[in-house]
Length: 184
Image (cartoon, rainbow, N blue to C red):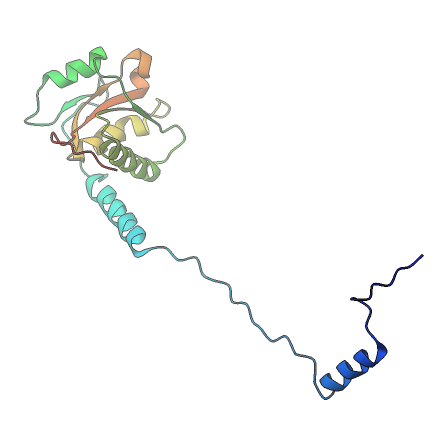
């Protein structure tokens, strides 16, 4: 059973009228070209990344050999800072809020990650962090303290207590500004 709806049904002369109205027209040819948009980065992002790389390369040189013993217990306090900081780190008076695990990294990746860790500490206002370099072939065990001594924001470092990694880790104190303003 079919129904006819009067408002929908069109008379045959309506179709003829429509055909007459569109006679002489041609179908449109689809010639629209869709261009792929390149992924662009903001100029500020590029500048910040270049600055971070430049700072990491500047602060962490492989040629610089500081006067610290990396074969024994790693112990360093920046000149002019309180010598008691190293003892506080050794005793575990400072608990690290950030931990960087460097297992499996090469020296170049380690430099970038150290720079990122120090930047994160300053940004999040974290004064103590732990760097777990492991023991392995002792490459990072010797190089990480040499890199950290070169950075101006490192106040002190000491071999971590056993609960934070012992001989395979270093605790660092980052110099934070004294007059911190609330930032959003």
